[in-house]
Amino acid sequence: MPTAQSTSTPSIRAGEATQIVNAIALEAGALILAIYGRKFQVTTKADASPLTEADTAAETLILERLAAVFPDIPVIAEEAVANGDVPDCGERFFLVDPLDGSKEFIARNGEFTVNIALIENSVPIAGVVYAPALKRIWWGSRDAGAFVSLVEDHQLVAPMSIAVRAAPAKGLTLVGSRSHGSGENDRRLNSLEVANFTSMGSSLKFCLVAEGGADLYPRFGRTMEWDTAAGDAILRAAGGLVLDMGGSPLAYGKRNQAHDSDFANTDFWAVGDNSVVREGRLIDNEAQ
Image 1: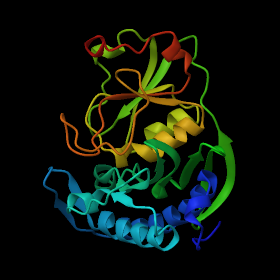
Image 2 (image 1 turned 90 degrees about the horizontal axis):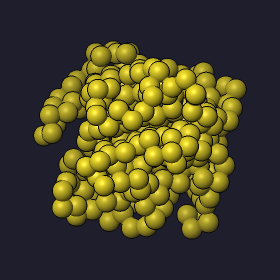
Image 3 (image 1 turned 30 degrees about the vertical axis):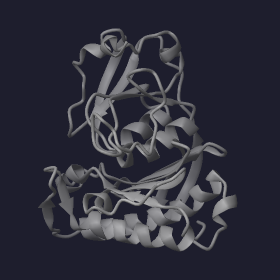
Image 4 (image 1 turned 180 degrees about the vertical axis):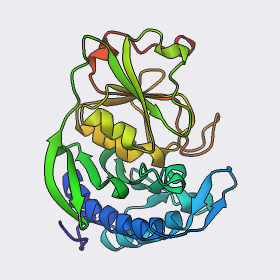
């Protein structure tokens, strides 16, 4: 696995960045697992979401590693933003969620991830999602495709490429949030033929669609850009789409929003087979 070393920021390709960020995510995952294996402290943030010592320790490590390798690329990180540290992100920046799925971490169900994404001109061009307790890592970039690998002793084992699947004729498999409401009964699903519905924590939902285990992840609730960017990058690299309710690709680096805070997302669809979009089955009448 490549180690994080000095790289020329202006010339680095998305695929090269992903290799370096993989190593950082694996290191952060090892730190998280060390905390996961013992008693740990949990506090509550201003937005009522939980904060564990694993969140803060992993973010500190990730920020240090990214600054060492990419000193000229700003980083928007969840806990730093919560503390008022919000750099000017410009056209190219990283989005970091050091521990996506804190509720899953606290519940010890294994469905938590390390998320790191590289954004360029509002588009997630590379991303890594690492689920250390599940020993799996996904990554993808616009110039190298999408991949998954088992992880043993913090090393990749048998990496393989992944791609979205064709929408099954017998109905779609949908995946929703385990801790924030699945959206299973939302009226916006009425136009879809749904065969199965499953729930899952953190960014694993994007990865399930990206590797062909599900067809659609509808999110009808608030998320932040660091929650979605890495999974979005992987899904796009695997041939999928992430669309807002108006049918436009989800954009990143959103500031000064009239309807919500900086970096907040609208509701969205994470789609595998683009035919679901072309056939007009994803319709939000209120957005028309």
